Image (cartoon, rainbow, N blue to C red):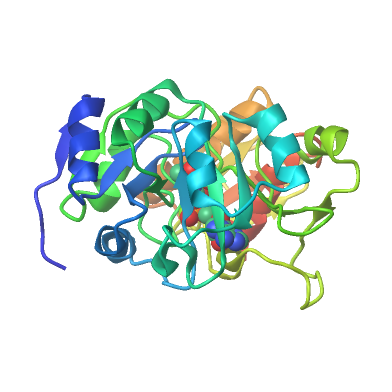
Length: 315
Ligand code: TXA
Ligand code: MG
């Protein structure tokens, strides 16, 4: 692809103007940085796939700045979607619903559904409101690499390939949104995230969880079949820090290993683990480290999403 000048700005107005004119704009959210384009503009959306090298069979999430826009994008808001919206919007969760024809097939990868999310991050909200159009946005990384949690990482991957980076803070959560398919009853969690299974069960007790072993007829997230979140280094999942004994490797976990790693991150909580994980992968690659050991955490709360991302990186 041809190299283009990437404007790096703190002005949400400027970034929104570029997006409305058909450009590609990376922006912060509370989960990870997204790479946005006008979701109603087919050629703008195609440029997202080109910039990332993303397979075209993997649909994009559409982001909105206010709830009124939802009705212009989806056919109807199902009962379970309404419960999720009432309890968790704006926030780190995406609902999949039947789409209207304003959302072109390139966004939904040919599916008749669309994933919609309303971020809570202030910069994201300001930017999305100024865009005044729904914004299709995958994570702002080269396809297959870990999602970016800082604008500098977006620059590292995508400078010269996109029109603009809207600078913001490092993301608070660090893992991608929870994705829930609300077209079925009961709805099904397609991707775990920081809105936890426990929190969702309080609102929808019989909600399902899709797993790789779910049968073929089960609804699934097309993105889950693609390789994800992988650093260049080999990722190894270990049960406990005490199993670590490779001083040339990198280590991340809640407990301190007996052997000091070349690069290590001892996290004070699961939230900190989630926030640090993808950036740690990137840092290890920059340091030329061959192996990254990740300590397992229990499945409760955000632990489930952390384990999901580590397992996919370790595949
Ligand atoms: O936190 C996030 O979700 C970030 C920020 C930027 O919003 N976005 C993100 O997008 O992680 P992406 O493209 O990296 O992941 C989107 C996931 C993929 O697994 C995709 O298959 C799934 O959502 N998805 C999107 N639309 C879908 C649909 N209509 N049906 C089923 N799955 C869908
Ligand atoms: Mg992604």
